Length: 103
Image (cartoon, rainbow, N blue to C red; front, side):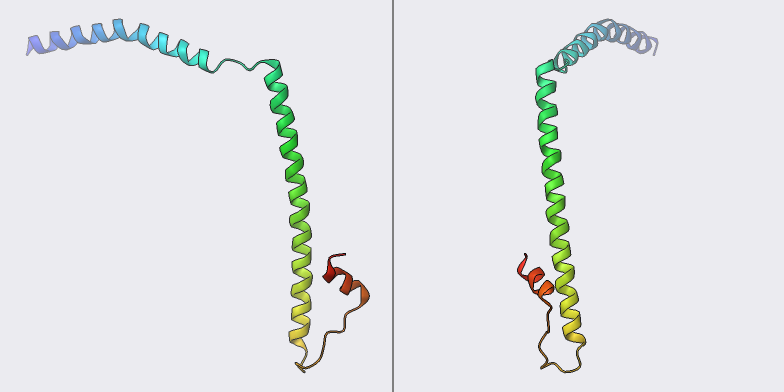
């Protein structure tokens, strides 16, 4: 039993003595791989980010327009379905006709 405890103690001392330099070397390697970006790289990334933000703004506008068109179409369908006589045609104003055409 005493031999096992002594063996574990010796192995622990060896692990600490050898492990510390290995851990230090590994942390230095990680620091080198995550070095700071060059100023030009930062500028390029910011330019790309602003391009992406502009594209997102445009997409939001398109989605908003599509939603308005869908809402308008749904209202027209509901009005048509609410008519008691199914044979009646929709009487659209010029403004509504233009909206349907997408103008």
